Image 1: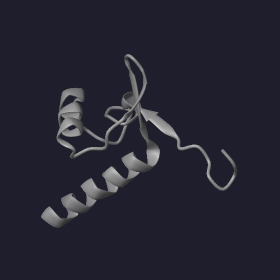
Image 2: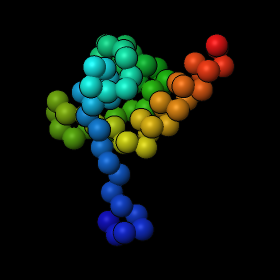
Image 3: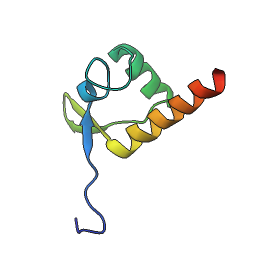
Image 4: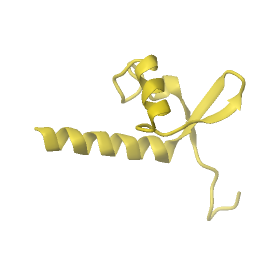
Length: 72
C-alpha cells in the first residue's frame, strides 16, 4: 500500500476484550454479537485466527459509549 492508503491495522480479540482491551465482555458474548451483526465481522487470517480492523473496533467503541451516555 502507498502512503495515502496505508494497510489497515488489525487487532486480535485478546487486545479488544478485557482485561487487556477496552470492551468488558466475554468471548462468547463477543462472538454472539458478531453473528447477530451488532459487532463488526472479523477477517479470517487462518483456520483458527481472526482479526478485526482497528477502525471498525474504534467505531464500535464510540457507538457503545454514545449509547451508554444516552441511557444515563
